[in-house]
Amino acid sequence: MKRLIAATLFAAPLLGASLPALAAPVNLVTNGGFESTTVSSGTWVIVNSAAGWTVGPQGLEIRNNVAGSALSGSNFAELDTTTNSWISQIINTVLGTTYTLTFNYAARPDNQGANSNGLNWSIGNLSGTVGQDTNTAWQTFTTTFIGTGNGMTLRFGSIGRSDGYGTSLDDISITAAGGASTGAAAIPEPESVALLMAGLGAMGLVLRRRKAGQGKA
Ligand SMILES: [Ca+2]
Ligand SMILES: [Ca+2]
Image (cartoon, rainbow, N blue to C red; front, top):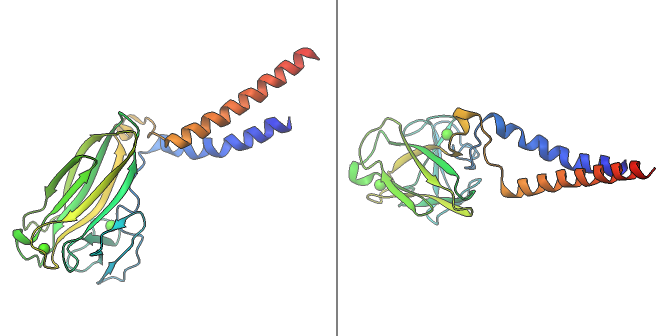
């Protein structure tokens, strides 16, 4: 019985942790809204690190209600800090699963023209450019890609003239496609599945042993 309790305790947190994924699609991008950095309203900072992101040597500019305003939350980002820069992070994917990448971009109100603006984006081998215009309204870009089963690099870089005035970026997300409309589970991390299966297997093993023990008694 002690072993059964131990096995249950082992499995329960894993079951609990996986259940919320059934209700809503999980954003696999960490800090996709740039809210993890504290920035006073009306000010901006250039940082060399930010939660979830690898930051290029030219830094990451995070603004709070200056030269535009966030699409959501308080903060948004710009990658032409003092010169063109980039950010990236590794997204763990499941082989064959379709994912949706979404992000939002806008020219700053005091932009220096279309030739100064723009972002390139990439996820794995898929890439493109946006924002080589002077549209100061937030625009949403969405695409889908197929998971390779490995970590895939999500990257954004500033393009256009390198002059300290670049395209704003906010609300970056990657979700397993279909998760929102069908209520199907977002795909758990492979490690979580393995642990969960190990936990359930341990429970089953204990139960079988108990049943076998009862038969002998
Ligand atoms: Ca934000
Ligand atoms: Ca620029």
